[in-house]
Image 1 (tube, one colour):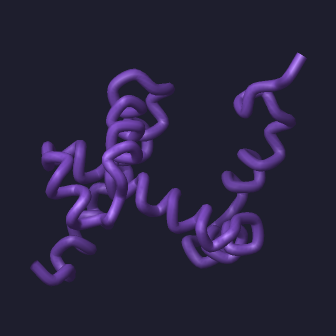
Image 2: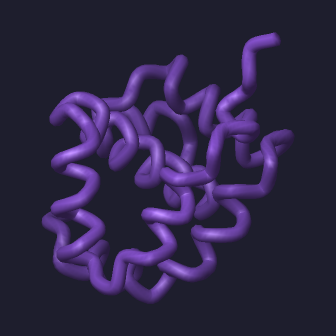
Amino acid sequence: MKKTPGEGSGLLYESLLRLESVDECRRFLQDLCTVSELKAMEQRVEVAMYLREGMIYQDILKRTGASSATISRVNRCLQYGDDGYRTVLPRVDEYWKNRKGREPT
């Protein structure tokens, strides 16, 4: 029987938990993922933050370049997923607010 991603060996998840800084995480993920994969993951997290703030799809699309399908997928995960976004997003609120304060309007 084929394993689902959550049923793997756990090595990836254990590896991520053992990283000690943003720089270590960035370097590990750059070794692990393609540039396209990283950009897609970064974009999904941004989309999730904007959705959490109540921003509408069209404005999220303009800000992030994400497709409506990506925005919809992230929204479904926020509403009906495994609570991964709900767990991590509040933990990065301060970073997000500081970053948004530096973005051009």
